[in-house]
Length: 196
Image (tube, rainbow, N blue to C red; front, top):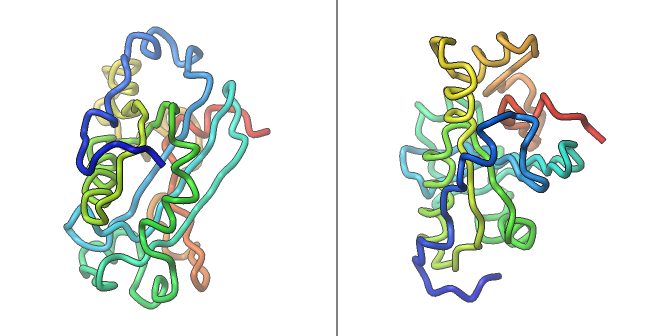
């Protein structure tokens, strides 16, 4: 883990879009798509994370983890969105244990999220809550990428982008959940790259 002092925001920074904006085919050599679900309105209440590891345009690894949020408290509003309930995460590890597995992968990577402001606020708030040092990485927002590539689309929500690209898409589908297994949706562009 990084040796940066608690709360050092400069370690998590937006990537320079110019390198990725001219064409989606110029995607970073090594990227990680990340998608969090939260248990409540609090950003430091992650209850699930999905990650897709992309190298040279190919998804080479997909990981999904349930996370027990602080106090295992859930908002009915959030549960209605993603279907995750307290009993699904009762024996899941907390945020620090889940992130410890992935922090070495984050270092130096380009991280990508659909609506990055949300996902990276979850990271910052959770790292702050647990007094963890931030890993060093840059990030991109796939909403911003989509807005630049398809400005006339009208909406850049994941379901709209998937339909536009002719892809099937199920987001926040609780019916897919079995026992303690949760499969958060990954950003639209992950489905555009080849799976190894």
